[in-house]
Length: 130
Image (cartoon, rainbow, N blue to C red; front, side, top):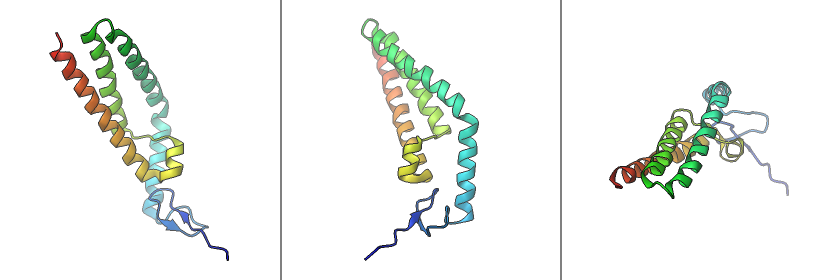
C-alpha cells in the first residue's frame, strides 16, 4: 500500500498538495519579502559577520593577557552580531529546508537574543573586573 506524502508550504510548513508551493497568498507574499530582503542584505551581513567572528576570536586570545580589553573585544562584537541578526534574521539554507522560513526566522532570532545576552554578561564582567 502506497501512502501519499503531502508536501509542506515553503513559508509556514503547513501540509499542502504536491502541485502547490505555498498554502495561501499571504505565505507566498511573506516568502517573497523574505527572499528579497535576504538578497539585498546578504553581502553586507556576511562582511559584518566575518569581522565580528574574527574580532571574537582575537578577543579570546587577548583575554588571556588583558582580561578587561579581551572581554570588551568579545562582548561588543557579540552584541553587534545579535542586533544584526535580530533585525535581519537570515537563517542558513539548510535550516530553511528543514524548518521552513517562519520557524527558521524564529530560531535565528532566539540565537540572536542569546548572543545579545552573552554579550551583555561579558560587558558586565569587563566593567567589574579590575
